[in-house]
Structure formats: C-alpha cells, structure tokens
Amino acid sequence: MSVILEFSLPATDFQLGDVLSGPPDMQIELERIVPTGDIIMPFVWATGKSQAEFAAMVRSHATVREFLELDTVGESTLYRIEWKEPPIDLIEGISRADAVVLEARGADDWSFRLRFPDHEKLSAFHNYVIEHDIPVHIDRTYTLSETTEHGHRFDLSQEQREALMLALREGYFETPSEASLDDLADELGITRQALSNRIRRANQKVLTEVLLSSATRYE
Image 1: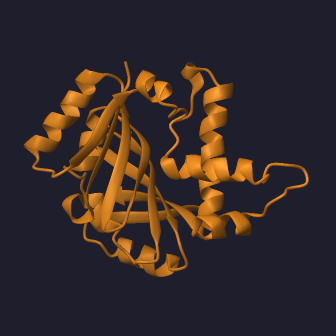
Image 2: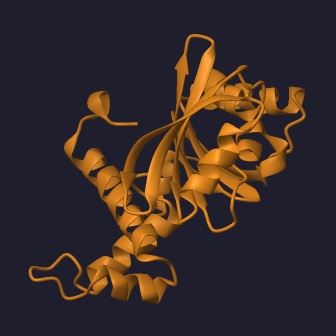
C-alpha cells in the first residue's frame, strides 16, 4: 500500500535547497526527479521577476554543470539541473527509495510531500536520512486510504485545493466567467501568476486521477 510522507528541513541542509537559494522574491517548486544512470536531474519551477539573477546564481554554484531553461509560462520558468557530481543527500535518498514527489517547495525552509510504493521503501528512506545526518522534521505519514477517508484526494496540496475551491465558489469556471484571476488572487493574497499555476497543476492532478487508469497515470 502506498504511503505518504510530509516533512520539512532548512534549505542549507541539502544540496538542492542550497543551490536554489536565490533572490527572496522567487518562489521555487520541485516538479520531479529523473534518475539517468548515475546522475539525478531535478526539474524545478521558479516563479518571480528575478529570473535572470536567479539563473545566474544557480549556474555559478560549484556543484552545477548546467542549468537549462526548458519552458516559460508568464513569470514561471521550468529548469533542469545537471550536476557535476551526483548529490549524496536528500535527493539521492528520494530517488533510491523510488519515491514520487507530490509537492516540494521552499526558500529558506523547504516542505516535501512524497509518495512511497510501500512501508518498506519508506523505511529505506528513513534509514537513509539517518545514516547521512539529514535533519528532516517529520510532520506526518499516512496511507492513500486515510487521505480519502479525510477528504484529501487527488494528491492536491492545501494551496491547490484552496485555489480550486475558491475558483469554484466564485464562478471562475462558469461561461462567461463570474470572477477573474486577479479577483481570486487578491482574495488569497498571492500573485495572479502564482494562482494560475496552482489552478493549472491542480486541474492536471484531478483530471489525471479521474480520466487515466493507474497504469498510465502521469507522475
């Protein structure tokens, strides 16, 4: 049975967090981790107006070989990191345990939500962080059946669920729309682009869960 783990840790305590510590106005979110041979390539979304400064800081880091811009949507850019040496820390532990990154974001501190295939893989990850002295703070663990019982479905983060619920309540999805992104963003106290990203990714998760079988599910 799949197991969900939520935890947090300071950016300075793992290589990826340290590398991505850029301008304070930037919002960073880890999209996925792709193991390629001995190399682990993270894909990250960066949202904000300091993209050039942020990219320059990451590229100047001693552990980074390449920081490639893959796509841009408004103020958000998707990047891929290629390392000079594989990180022997949190990211490697996630990859070794076959965990799927459901949510990972941060600046000075990072919060993660991972899905493990079973309790054995979760234990392997737990042993890894202990062996490598990675100071993760465990918030909670639970199974997918427990999330359904409590109404937490589709692997949505709290922020994504909040954005979708507000959009539904205010008639954003009606034709014609009864609310604009600017109106909803003002109510949540975030930027229009940040709200757009939350709604887009939340819709993708919900539609994937509803329309695709588990065998073809996007991760």
